[in-house]
Length: 247
Image 1 (cartoon, rainbow, N blue to C red):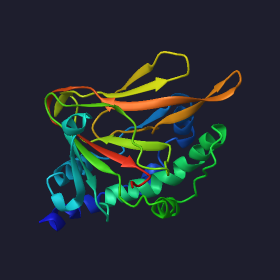
Image 2 (cartoon, one colour):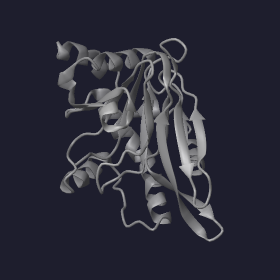
Image 3 (cartoon, rainbow, N blue to C red):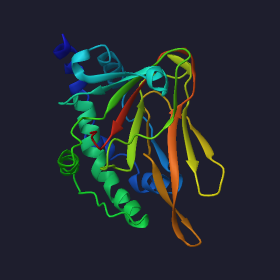
Image 4 (tube, helix red, strand yellow):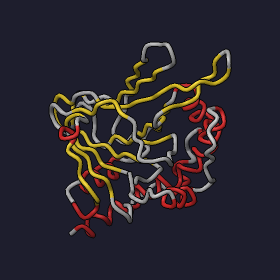
């Protein structure tokens, strides 16, 4: 049964040419200046529905997390197991080299020794050599009253500084509430909050934990966190693409 469901998921995997339709210089500039950027219509509705249906098939996942048990919020999510579904694998594979130059710029500006290789398989090899061998892409499910506390997705020393979330459900149709929220904390300043409006199939790229911001004395580190506000009705599904693996 899981193989039957995996077939439509595999058939709708995004290609490099599909990602090429976006204005990447503008998107990377937005990521650098704001810490996030939106990819409208990254997945079509059929792809979104195929991913949502996959949530019910335990064989596709390595573990399930009930948020309330860990103080993460309300709701639950599941981490995919290897081999990843084609949609997930292709998003990781094709997005990474587009984001890698900015990731290296950020590392240089923050004085970090880490440099990211040009292709994602090379980076995954680095993760596995560092003992981070568990896949981190995940599916999240929220029902009425569920929410996700502000957090950062850090799973070890190897951290790629950018990640992606794709909304798989339609606001005001499948669910109400449940806004995607980002906060930024700059030194000696109050946190700044940004609510990112998304439609079904939209992706949002954002900083995993911090980003460099130019100041009068050079670059300084701005801490970023993300979460989801309370879902007031219906069910909200999200695909999360994290480029580093976990310990």
